[in-house]
Amino acid sequence: MAALVPCHAVSYLEFQSPAGGREPPFCCKGKHLAELYGLFVCALMIGVLSWVSWRSLDTWPLTCYPMFSIVVDLATLRVGRIALVDHEGRSDWWRPEFNRMQRRVYRNLLKTGPLTKPAADEHAAAERTRLFAEVLRHLKPDQRRDVQTLRVIERRLELDNEGRAHVIDRVLCDVDAGTVER
Amino acid sequence: MSLFGAIDVNLPAMALDVFALYLAAILILSIPVHLRYLHARPEGVYGPPPKILGRLRLPNLTLTQTMAAQATLIVALIGAIVLQGAATRACVLVALLAYFPAFAALSDLETNRRKTYLVPMILGILFLSPGIGGEASEPAPYWPIWLIKCAIVQVYVSGALQKLRNSGPKWAGGDQLQVYLAAIYMWEDTGRTRKLLERPRLCAVISAVVLAVQSTFWIILVIPQLTVVYLFLGAAFHVGTAITMKIYYVKYMAASYLLLALVVAYQAGLLSTL
Image (cartoon, rainbow over all chains, first blue to last red; front, side, top):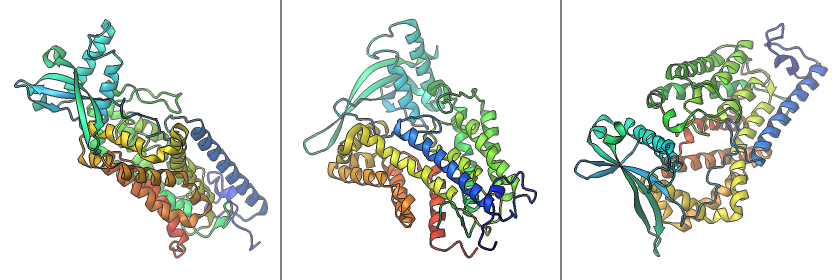
């Protein structure tokens, strides 16, 4: 008996162990059961993880971690940002504390159609107004007091022959903050 | 060492203590930022919380409900440390169940999206582990620790698989990293990001190293002695993405890395004296 290890078939079922699972008995059969249990849990977990990775699933909390894997071309890469323009025409970037918020606002704005044109229908127009109102709501009180216009800017980046980065900005639309608040 | 046999110390119980202690501490420290985020009512921008496994949507929780779930998670983690026997396992189960409502409304926060996903995975493995309610000196099987390593390995190997599937080996050429850095620079105006994206050779070297490390991370499962090497490489990778890309995996991944450190300590014989 001395060569045998504790019976983990009992210790893993601590709820049912008369000894509270603290001092499991020694037995041969239990050892095999415990090993089978371990084998089963390992096979199940590895199967799930492999499936998620192989099928490129991206759910919560099982994901294939696809970050940086989607092929993007620098020539077609466009990024959107929102600038806050005050009464004197000075502009500054909107920098929300939670930086993904700006990306998501821009992504949602793009869903309403080309931002260089008026919204195609009432629903799109209402969604745009709602999103701009969200931007205003997330401004600090002093920023909100000063802002006159929300300016949506599309950015692209070019690398010159010496490898230096140049950002080229294009204004997509200006939105009167007062109109949004009303 | 047999994978399914017992080892001389209760590594799963130690892993639970380390993991729960770190996670409880980081959750307590995160209360102010979580409160600010929830006060901002982010659902207006991000929409409803994600569905669990893409199927089960939790109801929209209020700030109070989310913070109550966070408090439950913290208490359950502390309970898992201080209690013994079946009560430990019950606390792990409560923590596992509380994770979902605790993070549903916070899932789009920069430090959380995909970064906390290992938490329920590791809690689930620990819940199924023999001996987590026992003393540190009791013998216990090694497979739960090996399985936790599998979950950590999946983060990197799957990341490499997706890159290779979409771009092939040319991902290591650095062009894709440069493009992603360009996007981050345009969003964030960070000088460090710009400096890196303007150095294509450095981008290529970093890409090659990242792809090599990610695609070979599985090796720690078969050659455990290399765990310490990959522990440092992985930590360097996450610190690097935090500095240059404002991608904060460190906060929650550190809990998993502490478990790798525990394995390294065990391999070095530092735990057998306990």
